[in-house]
Image (cartoon, rainbow over all chains, first blue to last red; front, top):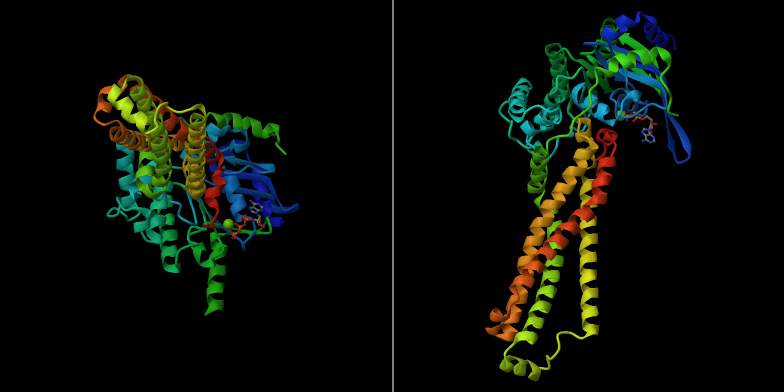
Length: 262
Length: 232
Ligand SMILES: Nc1ncnc2c1ncn2[C@@H]1O[C@H](COP(=O)(O)OP(=O)(O)OP(=O)(O)O)[C@@H](O)[C@H]1O
Ligand SMILES: [Mg+2]
């Protein structure tokens, strides 16, 4: 609990500073699901602030509420209580058109199951958010091609998702997430369906792109090996933040874990 | 459970509102392109819907056309033709009973094809839950999802209708030629047949689009959260 207070304590800082640095702010977020008459408290009052340009990993066992938290801060679902601010905009105040705009321009989603549009080529997949955002086709095509180049798939632009390996599909998804120069990339277990090596490649690529695109990255994982790129790790247990570790503290911990495993 | 922003937050959200714009509708032309790609790439599923329309429309056109041709023959046929028809027991077009029966069959055929299309479309919506959710995450509006499904069904409806009408017309004409001989071609009520053609096109496309309304609405109502589900 002391750690969560530490996080929420930041909210008492100067409002102007908050405006400029906090790209995501979750305040007392609660979510309860009804499952067969029984209440499942997926989130029990989560406070979390993420700074612009940070790489935050959310760690927690299965069922701890990572995906639920993601849906909230991704503007995909609304909390039962509490507030979520994306770029200091309370998402509860937005109508469907504004939410769609927010999802299109502010957030890039990366999914565990890649979620590429199966009938569309890699290029068309990356173009899609740009077209939805109103970019002219020719510009979208150029930008998509250069993004695919950046993720190392310049030679596969016309391939369909089913002609690509899992790692390659996730690269396309990364390019697609960057399409509209979002402020935030949300990746819910982006390496969950990849082998260790490919997963690490994706994480390292995200880390490199983070600086290139000046984007904030939030990922969820339950694999300690995927934490290497994180500036901060938020530990979620049973719908509550139980611990937050900065990068420095992390290195010691990763070291000890690696040592313990050998 | 809906709550109002506390004062502190409403100030910042008012400031933030300026930074959030309203998502605009994708151009119709782009929507047509995407719908067309969906059809082309999912030919199997598309054909299933289309075949249902073809069968229903072939049946509808065949019934309407043979009925019209028969009546034209009985009304304007040469004495020799009427004589030969009478010998085969064909003196009146259709008695009331037979006409009602035909209408029932027509109604049933259209209903069956309607349900078939509805079912196929619902299946295709369910199959694409994740895809629809993903598109919403990428910024697609509900109205775009509806538009895409309606466009897809319109394409399928048009193709199925044209094919069904061609088959129905061919069947009715070849049967007419068999029964009434070469004389049929002179008797053909061209104007009436063209009017029927228009009706058949309307019925075919209308049937498909109406059957697609509910599935399209279901698709649009899909929550983007669905895209996050890891199953499937
Ligand atoms: N739509 C839903 N209906 C009912 N209960 C749900 C729903 N979504 C999540 N839950 C419940 O909320 C809790 C948190 O789920 P969540 O998916 O956020 O966990 P997670 O940390 O992402 O787990 P995993 O690592 O397995 O993805 C779980 O107990 C889950 O059963
Ligand atoms: Mg999850």
